[in-house]
Length: 193
Image (tube, rainbow, N blue to C red):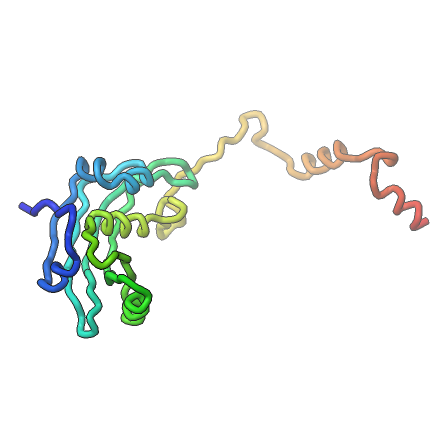
């Protein structure tokens, strides 16, 4: 059985010792602790799986590598139906305390996670941040080989099945004829004469 994720960790100690955190966050824990994620999705399906390896490299970047997986329910903004979305996040984050460390970490290809020197941090915040970044900006059913997975049906009025577009356009044009005295371009027509 996987251990429960710690709520406060010392990133210096974890990176010095090469600690690995692996386990799950249950739906109940997520509902209570990952409030920003819960506010961004309709629901979470199942557990969140995480694997985080803390270490430091030869130029003293203190980092965490790993992978996070979750399944969430979102509302499609195209058809307004709910759909299931798999979130798979690869994590490669360096812990930084100042601008020099940030530049060094970014030059090494890491994303950055700002902490003060002696700050303990909650790894669930890091997990939640990564899941939020993996959410689409506009939630829609994924594209399939045949187009969209949305099943949008537009109702056709029963009494207008043989709709004549040309007749509708000419009828609307007739309805939009503005009397000459109300037409703002009437003055220009007089100047042209």
